[in-house]
Length: 431
Image (cartoon, rainbow, N blue to C red):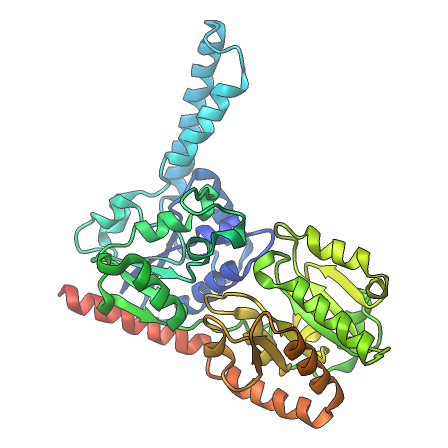
């Protein structure tokens, strides 16, 4: 099979990896190993993203030799566009048509964004075009015998726009992360891979009669190999010291700092627990980048002086430190309101760390009976669950074993094989 895989996410997130970019990267690495798949990369967005994606590939030794569609042609085309535009801008300025010199260059960047970096002739020899996130280009959908796949991770910005600071019916999206545009590109000819049954149900309810349910597959992603039970206590100690974590038990929360992750709830429950139980040696570690509307988190800390020494905000964690950070934690707490899959709980379980998470959306599919699941607003329940794990060494051991067993159900090997099965089914239906 000839597969073209859109790696725009890798270009967009090359400096700071997100959960989606990690999944895209892991899939690319593993699908390349499959002998029955001839892999080609592309990007369907702007030339800026194409250039960033090209640079990403050059930095990845394993993927660097994979064919990247229109690599030389696009560079020449882009240079010609800028050369011609520069001359045009010079003439326009001399004629005095624009008083604001920034305006022509703003228009030029819009032209650059809308000029597709894809050479559609290159796609005519392909069997599958697979986008792991972005909208399927209309020209791609019209190529005869080319089967289009798109992965849908979640519909959260559409279903719960307030989690992103968006007003219903007035949704304004980042042009590079426009989920609505991606969903609107799906039609009855599109084959879809959903990250969970929860996401599949959401998608079917959203698109209703605009989608062929028989062309939807639920394929769970796996966690990266960088997540493993770290038994090296020296490494854990060095990692804790690196991020300013005391040599004491700690609760770990790892996510983007934003309202959907329900972090203020975690902080309040932790504060109530240590105050009521007079626990002196327990810390709460918040890891992850700042998202949006995170000010309430810091305001909550400022208002509670008891928290200031017991809560440690460490920001972005480097890949090589994640296994030790997870493994060293007493428990991983993730009371998110809604998830399309829920990769962090899987990462924690793969490290053998007990998990407390929400009983909503896809999270029960991921955690199963290996951890504690609660209503995301249940303050007493979360506090008591943390106390149980803190107080009971044997319970922690049982949950650690169950976590590792549950994590084995989600592997990249299984993900790739199920995706290839979907590819083959689509090709079979075409023939």
